[in-house]
Figure (cartoon, rainbow, N blue to C red):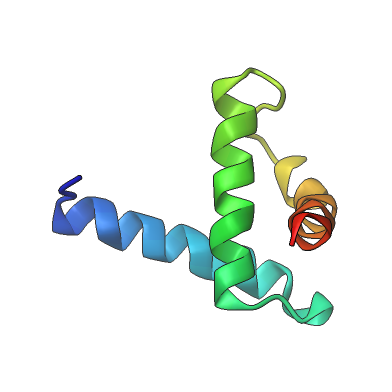
Length: 69
């Protein structure tokens, strides 16, 4: 897949925001990428909505990523 610079910048920004919000949990960049995948999967399956409550779900998503490893 080829992504535009804008798409890559947006994804990098998203992963960075995820990591910053989970820094107290020791979230690595790789884990933040995996959390991003979880978020996109859940949004695509209408399991979650993109709103302010999404931030509250991040620790749960990180735990899900860690238990899958």
